[in-house]
Length: 473
Image (cartoon, rainbow, N blue to C red; front, side, top):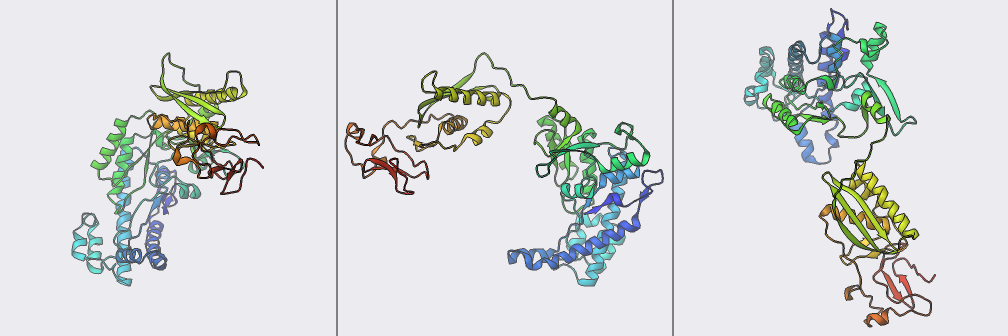
């Protein structure tokens, strides 16, 4: 990727201009470099078909970043007609330079194998090149089938200290979160903003000129126009994200996609503020997050729900899941007698789950946390579902509710298909007789608490043939 912000002379002045001498040299070097990379990597493709396809067309992608910073240095406000006009001329000249460089490489090394001069010269994109460039293509051909792109370059732009791709400055300052460094949050000025403040001796971003416009201040329609202007001069697709406010409606997003298609964009990406937690926050978002916790939504007078009867190692448990108009809302879990320790901790789990649901935590996140927590003895339900513990039973009840509420049946009696051949087929009453060591001969199909294998009743004890576990040890 070529950092366009580095090719500006006399920046921040009324006489600033593009340093075309250096930019043209960089563009020609980039085309040659990427063409060499194709040959260098030709033997590294996993499949021979990939190698053949790569070398048959010799596609490369001279990319760009730092465009937003470049406009600021040149004195253009991103969302202005002057910026649109300048951008059209900038990328028109860039595409002709890169295509002429490919012509020179074709004269030096030969055209790409799939090159068909007659068809190529008739393509709409080639017709948009300058007469001089088209003449060179007619005389020498092209080394590469396609040459220009704007790839995803978010992390690379952070590393380079510049605005990303063709996008405007994201924010004048922001809070970046990191889980890999000792400090969790970092307050960061955009590098260009920091540089300008130092050069001009300013102490606050409030005194910056209006050319420092940020992504959230630009009308989405104008962002689409800017991308479409650049797309006319890029033969591959463009990666660019439109930052939208939190309150944007689906209808407005639909109009953005339609407008992008109408203007000839090959693709468009939108990001609604707050739709993905985390990595990068504007200063306003970070301040709001630190001011306090989210209050749980109030309980309505009437709710609707279902109750699930589960069998656990501690006995029968009843899980009631209720919902309001926004989805799963609260959960009650009852286990054992009122006043018992089992009832107390089960009720506490239910209350905490209800508080989380009313505070906006996704049910799936709660299910993920509770699922497969193991107790002393797993219990199989009649439908084959294995309940490993009380928390796991609650998770499975929530999951069943989300699936549509199919009742999870109890395993009251073990069918013949679950009986161990070592137990035999004696009547149920006889099977429940207590042996001399105090263990019941048959309590239902159960799983080994160590490995999850089937427990077999033999020689007066429940044992696991898979790992050797025995209740009598």
